[in-house]
Each structure stands twice: as C-alpha cells, then as structure tokens.
Image (cartoon, rainbow, N blue to C red):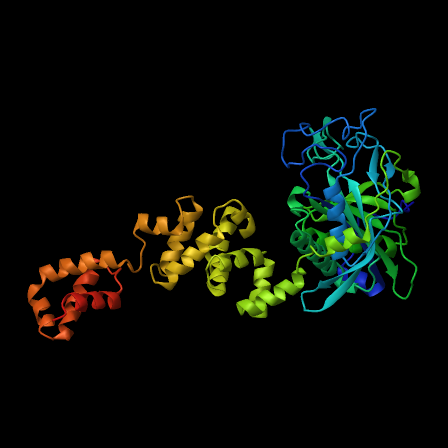
Length: 510
C-alpha cells in the first residue's frame, strides 16, 4: 500500500519526470466489430437503440441458453491479426473470465486467455517528425463486450454520489477484439506522442479493413493505457496503473503524460504505486482511482465448456489474407504522389481525416487541388462553427464529394468565383440544395456559360443597337466592342465576354 504520508494525486513537472525516470507503456485497444449480430447470438448490434431491446436469453445469460460463435467475427479477427503481421493460431479456445459486475449479466465474460486467435505481431507507426516506431503486438483475442451502466442522481455520472443505477444490456455480447501490445520501452519524452500515433495508425488500419466503424466517441474503439516508471539506469519494470476506456486520440496522449507526472510525484516522495485501474476525466485532464487491479489468476479463467475450439484451416487463412486492402501508410504515399500534394498539404489532409473524402471527390470529377481547398477551406470553416468535424459533416450528408466536384466544375468554368463560393457553401450546408441549385436560385453566377441565355441577351442588344450592328456587318469588327459592353450590362456582369463576342460575330457575319 502507498504510504499515508504520500499524496497519491500530486504531480510533478514533465521535465522532472524525464530527468529521473523512463516510462514503460502497454496499450490495450478494444474494438467493437461491425457485424450485424452479436458474438454468440443473433441479436442486432445497432448503436443507439432503445435500452434493452436488443437482448435474448443467450446475451442475458439465462439458464439453459447456449452460445454459437459468430463466423463473420472470427473472420474479422483473423484479418485483423494478419494486418498486424501476427501469427494465426491453428487451434484456439474461448475461456470464461469470472468476475462480478452489474453490466455482466452472466457474471463472467466469454473471452480468450492463453490461446488467442492472433499473436506475436507488430505495427510500424509513423510519428510527427517522419520517423517510425515499431510497436510489438503481444496478442489480438476475441471476446464479447459488456453492458452499459448509467448512474443517476450524482453530479459526476459515476456510481459515487448517485441515487440509483440503470443497466442497458444492448451492448452485452457485441463482438470485440482486444489488441494488446508488449511493453513499449525507449519512448522517453515521446511516450504520449507514440501512444497517440499508435492508436491513430491502428484506427486507420481497422477502418481500411472495414471491420469496425472505429468511432471512439461512441465507444466502438477505446484504449486502456497501462503505464509505469523505471528509475533511470534500472531494468526492472515498475508497478503499473491502467487508465480505462480513453476514447479520443488527444486524450490518449494526455492520459500518458498525466500518469507519468503523477507516478513521478509518488516515487519522488518515497511512496509506492498502487496497482489499480484509473478513470480518465476529459474535462479536467486528470485520472482518479477506480479499483484495485486484479491479476489474471484472480479472474479464475477456465475453458468455455459450451463452445467448440476455433481451428481455421491454412487455406482459409490465406484466402482471408488475399482480402487485405492496401496498407493505409502505403496508400497515403501513393495518393500524395498522384495528387501532387506537398508534405505539409498532405499532413493537413491527414490531420483533418480527409483522405477518403478527397479521394471520393477526385473520383467524382474534381481536381485534387480544388478538392483539398474546398474541404479544408470553406467547408472546414463552417464545420467548426457547427461544432463538428468535416468527416462528421459529410456523414450527415450536409456536403458530399459529388457536390464539391460540382463546385470545382463551376469554379473552373467561372460560373462562380471565390466570392461566390463563400456564399454558396453555407447555403448548401443549410440544406438549400445542391451547389448548382443554390447558385441558380440565388443569382450567384459569376459568369453565365449557357449559350442559349447569352444568345437571348445578344439578340436583344442587336435589336436595340441596329446602327452599331450594321457597322459590324460592314466589316468594322472593332464596333463589336460596344455591343459586348451592352451584353455585359444586360447580363449584370455575368456574361463571358469572349463567348459573347463569338456569338455576336457569328450572328452579324456578312
């Protein structure tokens, strides 16, 4: 136990930590798989359904209900393992992980213990300065998610201070993959950055595999941060704490740095670290104590008697390997070359999560440059005002790749100019229609390119200026300038002067 004379919630500066200690991390990422049904039953997995409407005797753990393994979830687990350069087990089993918790209706979690589906892999993680850090993967194993507790009546949303608790079992039984790293050493002062970059790289990989929507804000991907400190020069691992369910990239980095500073303060005071789980508080950027952390033996793992072993054939594994997409890092390099973006431009695109949107916009007919400028410019500015990210804005259908390509076409033909773009985008985002519909409905054209509209205006000007028209017919081509000026006036400056000249000379040819 930590000495009573030690303030376990005190912190020291990050520089003080780095002067005396080396951090060691272990990251456990839980990923909800995007299957239509749960891991061991046929219940739906739709996010946001009414509480306790997606349950059955199996996922509620009722007596006599028997589980059946979701084949699609197993295939997804194998594909994830292959993408992480893991070995795939020829034979593995599920196990019962026994512990009581209100959102565990069976009082045990069906998981994998010493026989994971995938093991001994790695993921190369690009860092902000262009260097790469290799994260060694210990295992990726299958399990089921728990239900969700809602604590009511308190000020923090946690059980302490609440008047009562509610449990929603819709999430209980949703297929999960837990990806566990080996201890990450040598990260030094970049530990937080490396943790963030690893989770970001893993998220991109899982999204490319199309096995999960990886929406951290909805809990379909979440990270547990294990951290300990070693005095410099020593090799024995320190006691770790586990900060649970961190659900944003920024918070992963902040949680690592905060725990480093908290551990450092305890150790400098001569105290010892309590092995425990910690809760991350997004609003204050601190962790608070949860419960004493159990070791594996405390969970009394034993093989699940109601499920047969999983034994994928080597042929099946190779067939699944053939379905793996182009690795995200390689794809980004290829697209950057194809699009002609500088390193800085590509970094901005990556940071905004716009690689796929720009790719879809280019496929819809836009130039890469205009696609980048529109998404990162006017659209991003209005997304910020709405308090959402650009990808979220696109997901809601407020702006689509096809519409950005339409804006590109109008800009290229000077149907609208940059000032017009600033007027069109907010109206499109406001639901007034496609860019073309908005431009036409509000008279936002910079130049009218419709020949039939121009011809009507030319005819009207010729009829009103017959003497000038006759001069053009007589070969005085320079007189056409007066007529062009009248057409521009008639079109309120929205006519293409070159196109108007062509039409005038064609109509007044001798």
